[in-house]
Length: 448
Image 1 (cartoon, helix red, strand yellow):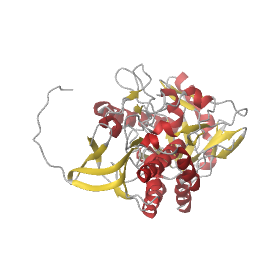
Image 2: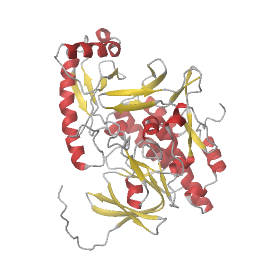
Image 3: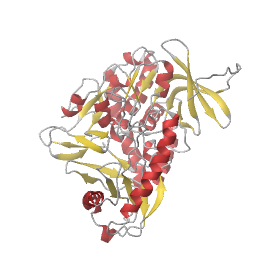
Image 4: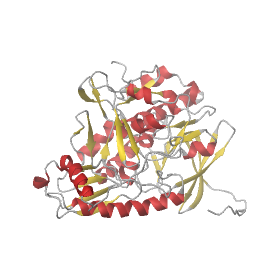
C-alpha cells in the first residue's frame, strides 16, 4: 500500500444530532445496549453500517444463536434472558425460530431465519424508542478531552456527519470507536494470527427425508473424498445443519487465510477484499462436494452472506481481562452482569478446536464481569461484544451471541446509571447495575 499522503482542506462537519447514548454497531451487543438505554428513558441512537440489524448473525449469515444455553451439571438450560428474550420471542412470532438442537452431546444452539431476525430487530428497536441511523459507516472520533469522547464521525450518502453524545458504547465488533479514542487494545494471538474467519452460505433443494441426520455422515464423506483425491477442504470440522424448513440448510465449512497462511485481519481493507474472493471460491467447491451427499443431489446455493464472517480483530483492554481459565474453571465475579455458557471455540489453521469446562461436574458457565466492558482512562466509553476485554482464548468463547447480548445490555444500563449519578463509567454503582439488570429480566448466574 502506498505511503503517500494528501492534505485535505479544513471543513465544517454538519452535526446529525445529539443523544444521551450513542451506540456504534447493530449486532446483538449493540441492539441490547440500545434497548437497555432507551427503556431507561435515555435518548439513544444506534448507528449501523448496513441497512439492517443483526451484526454477524445477518450480515455474515451465521443463522445460529450460540451461547444462549449452558450445561449446568448435566442439565442444559437457557441462561441468557433480558433483551435477548424479547428478540427471540419476536422472531418466533414471525415463524423464524427453530427449536434448540444438540451439539456434541454437551450443549445446544438455536437456528433462526435471517429475514425474520431482521424484521424482529426492527420491531424491537422501534418499540423501545431507539433511534436508528442506517448506512452510516463510522470513520473517526472527536475527543472533548483525553478522557471524554465528544462525537462519533460517520460517512453517509448524505456526506460526512458528526454525532454528539453524552456517553458512547462501542459495539462495533472491531473496537473501532475505542481505538480512535486512544484506548489500548490487543489483536490476535500475539503470534500474527486471529481466529480464522469464514464465509457462510445456505443451500436449498434438499430432500429432508433422504438427508436425515446428514451432519453425522458428512465428516466421514469428507475424509473419504480427500483420501481419494477428489476434493480438498479448507478445514476438517464441518457445520451443515437444517434451517426451519428442512429443504434449506446452512453451511459453515470455509476458512479464510491471507497470502502468508495466517487468518485474515478484518481491520485490513486489502485482506478483507481477498477474503471475500477466497470465500466465494471455497463455497463453489464445497457446494459441489455436498451434491454427492444423499438427499443433497439437487441442492443449490440460495444465498452467500453479504460479508465475510469475522470472529476476532481488536480486543480492547478493560479494567479486567477475561481469561481462558475463567471460562474453563467457570469463574465467579462479584461484579457479574450475566453469564457465558459457551466453550472455547478456537478456529485454528485447518480445523476448529473446542475446549469445554468439566461436564457434567461443573456448572458449565462463567460470570462476565462489568469491568471487562470498561476501558480505563475514559469517563463516558464502554465496549461490548467481541471487542470487549478478553484474551485471545477467552474471546473464542465469549464472542458468541449469548455473551454479546449480556455485555450489551449491561453497557446500556450502565450508561444510564452513569448519567443519572454524574459519574464515570468505572464509578458506576455495580449493585445498582445488577439490580437494574435483574429487573429487566436478565440472569446474572448468582443463584448457582
